[in-house]
Amino acid sequence: MGTLCIQLRTGTMMNMDTNVAVKLARAAMDKGHKVTVFGYGEGVFLIKEGQDPKRFPNVGKEVQSMTKEGLEVAVCETCCNARGFKR
Amino acid sequence: MRSMSTLFILLKAPHEYHSLDAMAALGGEDKIGALLLEDATLYSVFKDKKEEIADVADEIFVMGDDLQARGFKLRPGEGFQEIDYPRAVDLIMEDYDKTITL
Image (tube, rainbow over all chains, first blue to last red):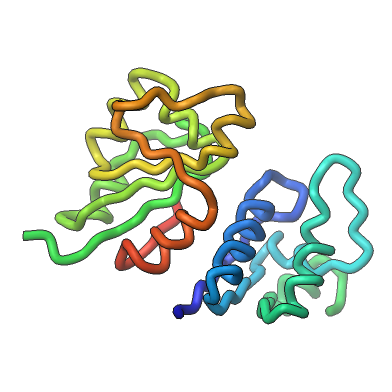
């Protein structure tokens, strides 16, 4: 099995890119691959706690649950600081 | 003889790409695959866009869910393969040597 690394550069509610990344990650994990997601720029919003979207899938919640199954998530700390939130 | 293969992931609508020259240039002599997700699935809908991507890519894969979400279906025999997420993982992890998102 291999390792799939996905670099995420868009926010969770800008478009459906994050949703696609999560679906790919889920499918890869189901096949036994190791998956790492790296959030950069607006992509750091993936780990923001307390997201409550009304018209988009709650990918933050989904990712949080997937980390318990082995998904690794890393984000750019400088990008987090620039957006005013801490891990 | 081709020694490498490159899979390009396209996410944006066809009109958002000025051209697919980058795909041809980065792919070079490699076998080129195109994986169409989100609005890029519309490449499989419009005649001129179908021809444009078929000129560059050797294989073209369309995410079925994303195409159906936009109210379209693939017509058989036009060189586009409808796939799901598990198949997309196989393309990225096994079938192609490298993956580039445009």
